[in-house]
Amino acid sequence: MAEINAHKISKSYGKTQALHEVSLKVESGELFGLIGPDGAGKSTLIRILTTLLLPDKGSASLGDYDVVKDYKQLRRMIGYMPGRFSLYEDLSVEENLQFFATVFGSSIQENYELISDIYHQIEPFKKRRAGNLSGGMKQKLALSCALIHKPDFLILDEPTTGVDAVSRVEFWDMLHKLKARGITIFVSTPYMDEAMRCDRVALMQDGKIMAVDSPGVIPDRFPETLFAVKADDMYRLKIHLEQSGKLQSVKLFGQFLHVVPDKGFGKDELINDLENQNFKGVYAEQIRAGIEDVFIRLMAKQEEDDHAK
Ligand code: ADP
Image 1 (tube, rainbow, N blue to C red):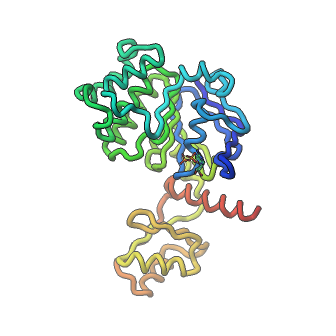
Image 2: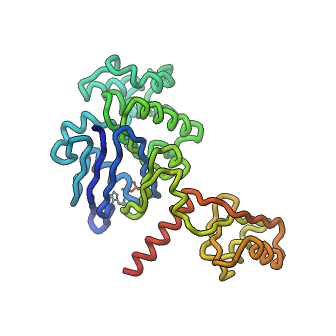
């Protein structure tokens, strides 16, 4: 079975502890997302799972193979797309693909069918040097290169960072097609909206996994009432709400402030208060939390817990 198991993995770089006893399980054939901001420890975990870095403590396996003991077998079974520098910029599109196929003792022809959908889109540029491709095209080539040896596991480290919005959507469509072929996919991203396209996600911060669940139910982990609030003068609104003493949190989300009121302070009280303060264009509605709200709440809770220690 093509499962991924990590058991209490810890890893430090000097004084920086990048991973604290991280455990998780990815089911065979699952599209699993690792979501977290810069520095959360995503790349470190991915490098350990792809056998490129040794854990200080803990263990991990992909299928029946251990990432430390069985690294040779695993490297043939894993398709890895690192965040950067996976392509040879001086080689052409075609040469890059040829190179990765050869390294794994395969050929483009042998596994063309698996990548045809993706490669087809860059094939017109096959003589172009990889360094001269757009971000979206580089990403498609890197994905083709990661797949050319027909891996059981596809592990992608922030594949959509620095890629335009349209290419990001196309990329996730491609991942879904690969999942439909039974490949287990583990993908990290700093973008919360991409969480929605995963079967399950792990929310990661400061080297710890804070929650693992399907993205549709993660908002249920936000038990408080939440309002989206807006007024013409957003700057003054934010300061006023932060200083009001009646709210537990105030966070800016795009063009709204998301606020959690104290008990007994409802929508009417909120609107009355803002109108009394002469705010114009006041809007306040109760909303369902999104993954970002849950993330921020879990982060604040983790900080409180860390301080309490
Ligand atoms: P992410 O991929 O979520 O951005 P990383 O795994 O790259 O997180 O980093 C986790 C932490 O480890 C960060 O504090 C980062 O600065 C640190 N770190 C990562 N790689 C190294 C390294 N080679 N040497 C020292 N510190 C590192």
